[in-house]
Image (cartoon, rainbow, N blue to C red; front, side, top):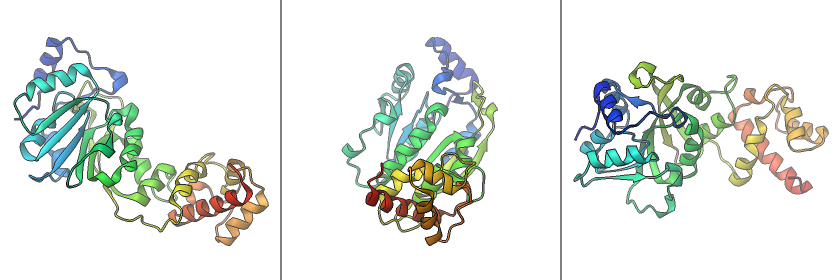
Length: 288
């Protein structure tokens, strides 16, 4: 069942149910069928796929997913939208509309035989928290195709030397393979968003790109390597971890890392090595 709505159909539905799209929730509805088809093509849908859809809205993607995949779990936070979509898909056996915030999903209760796929138009205001939630539970899924703000996507795929390279770039590079599939024009949404968006495909890696000996320590330290981006890595580390510059300098010299580099100029391997060495030093000196 195709649940896609044209602009006229969408406006009539919203009016009928007395719904005004909520800007604060990033409610921008896809109204271009060609773009819908392009997004779905990136998901490489197979008959045995199980999908979790984030923010289905009124079903621009949902109906096609239901027709082509094994099962679809759609998480819609807005009660009115969830209710309408449930009614539109009533009687369909391979879909469940959950009136629930995706971030409330209890991943450890899932009992799927195979890894699932993720798809959705992530609300702009909460796209980054959702992406990190996906990373946290990446053992449950094999692919995510998501629409996210272009500026977030650029930071995710940024490489060493790029001004956008930071914590989110390093984490996603270590744990996933990411690519920007398509830039979406604002005019294909109603109402038109002020923020440009892209379709991004994310595939978790079976193993991290670089060996990490102490993952817990590295993940706790990494964010602090990318604060005060204009300062040298020597000054950033000294201030962030309240350690004497001489100690930091000795660590960097042992790793053959130039202390005057900025954090965005560090190679991925150097980022991990610094984090591991800082973790060891913190343990020795009992520094928070």
